[in-house]
Image 1: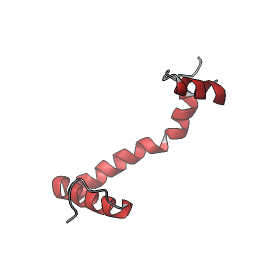
Image 2: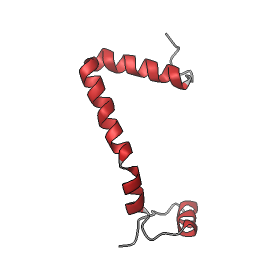
Image 3: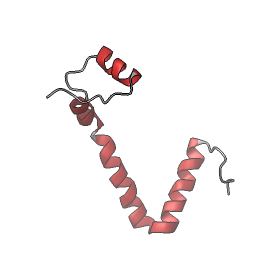
Length: 74
């Protein structure tokens, strides 16, 4: 077992994370959990278009520099 608090390689992190999920939730619910997380990732392009609608790269950069929200124009 890896020491807690130590940075893990990506593969080790995934393997240990999966084992922890299965140990706590069981294989079916661990799988459902991972699938639920994956759903949000598929919508990023749509979300990005909505959040940044009508914004130029320069506007987004300026908003980031000043810590301002980057909501799109309606």
